[in-house]
Image (cartoon, one colour):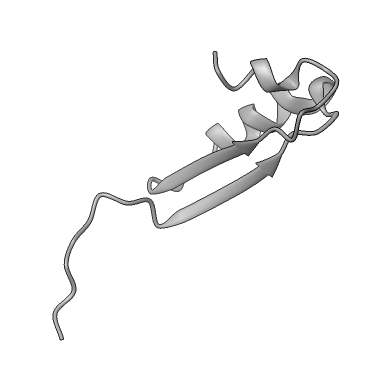
Amino acid sequence: MTRQKTNQAKVSILVPIYRMQTYLEECLDSLLGQTLADLEIIMIDDCSPDRCGEVPAV
């Protein structure tokens, strides 16, 4: 069996962003500051009543 190389991230981080607008910037800064190169960050907004769903789009 041979392994094929892909361009997919080796680590995926799922971040639920319901009612966390106050902490979202700090959370993203922390995740983006990681030294791991193959990193995928998936932000999940479940119709939060605050504006946190707008932040990841920036």
